Image (cartoon, rainbow, N blue to C red; front, side):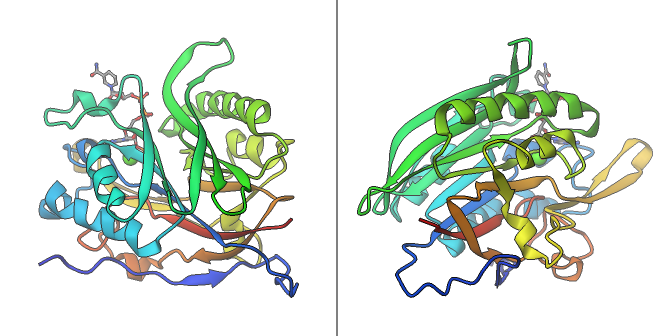
Length: 313
Ligand code: NDP
Ligand code: CA
């Protein structure tokens, strides 16, 4: 008796030339980015106070999480806050995905009374279409070289038929507003790794950056010599990021509730190699509902980003 999952439509990408070339544009590469909300981080006194506890039960959430991923049927799926990797891997394997997982060194999930192991980043790909040539598990470091508690995965994937290769990275940067400098250093570290390992190749960088577009780490990726654009700017004719990719109400001290609707999830791509043609729209506030996220209709506080790309060459 599961209430229906929030359904969203696709929209053509704005600000890009329509593909008029009659020669075949090649396959559409659909990529999903989603912080699916770690089960161990979904409960707690200050957490998601407007969401009914039944909606947060894993037996309910796990079905909507799978449904969300299966609905959009992406070739590559990038996930953060995965603390039930084997459940997702075993179920996605039934429909032809392979995947990898890299946990955070000292995941906050491990400090919750009921937990399912550490959370981390994961990547899945459709193994009939693409194969993984290399996987790099990355501990993000600060400028001094010290490791932080945040991670990334960089995979090189290759189409089995055309042999065309491309890179996809997934990351989840440090949470909470005051840590903007740490996020900046983590972003610089990741950018450097990408410059060393993926320069001059088609590349998508997906993640929960925990940073609004005004933060330095966002500028690092937008102005990188990797020549990256942000896919979700193509949802608006003004080429602005969406107003929100996460919308939640948390309890605070003295029962004071705080509502956060902001844009912190991104999918960057190399503009000389890739062109977004279509994007999954963000739902309106009315569609999300007044109790915001997560809810009976959507299992995470973050909305998924789904983009169809074509290769330019
Ligand atoms: P991060 O900031 O990277 O991770 C915190 C995680 O918790 C993120 O996934 C974040 O989600 C989520 N989160 C943020 N705010 C809340 C909230 N109010 N309620 C529930 N979840 C939230 O931190 P680190 O990995 O660096 O770990 C630091 C945290 O982990 C500490 O604050 C501590 O609570 C806990 N910890 C505890 C230890 C201990 O008890 N000894 C040891 C190690 C860690 P999002 O990114 O979506 O905001
Ligand atoms: Ca979270």
